[in-house]
Amino acid sequence: MRIDILTIFPNMFTGVLNESIIKRAIQNNHLEINIIDFRTYSKNKHFKVDDYPYGGGQGMVLTPEPIYSAVRDIEGWEKATKVMMSPQGNKYSQSDAKRYSHKEHLVFLCGHYEGFDERIRDLVDEEMSIGDYVLTGGELASMVIVDSVVRLLDGVLGNELSHEEDSFSDGLLEGPQYTRPVVFEGMEVPKVLLSGHHKNINLFRKKESLKRTYLRRPDLLTGLNDEENILLEEIKLEIKYDKNLDK
Image 1 (tube, rainbow, N blue to C red):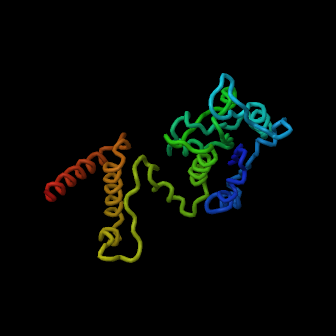
Image 2: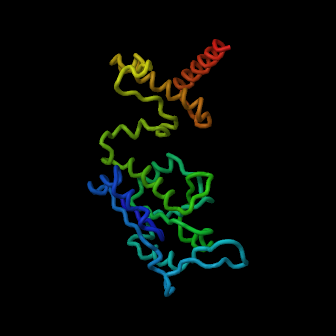
Image 3: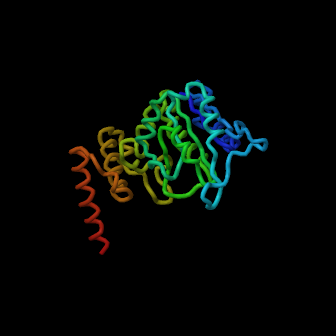
């Protein structure tokens, strides 16, 4: 996979590209990332890339010329999936991460100031937001998306099944995880996880995943199969029973 990121703050990406999963993906030739400072494409003698908005208003707006030039200078840009980081975009989800992970070439455009000249939107294929809150620019949002996509690429994770068990990978939150010691300050690891009985362990994990999703993100409980619906009803009864005991 190739990823190009357009920004006016390229140094923000230094740490991200040189640590953990993304670093390994680059070293193992699963990934090529290019950070492009579109300020260098400005024809202004001061390399200015923003200007005051027509009609007045607060803040500055990114001008179209340097961004168009920067994108068009990317090899294969016409066929690449071009994504604008924008608070007005669709809210990013795990399904988007999976979709992007099957792309050969992604281009991310990071904004700043009061946003983009509207004509820049004609250059991109999608607009994406990572949540309903305000960031200084699109750089952090693009890092979040890149990390979530790269870990899904074949051969990137040491354990190929690990990303399949993450929260949201099957539409549910991941259940509780435990490691040594078996007992810590009186808190014990559930005995089923120590039993070696894989069928019971898988059932326990599925049920705990459903329970955590029901309690924290019930909006995700759509499209459950028959087995999951039965488990969910059991969970609801158990929670109701526990509440009655506490009265």
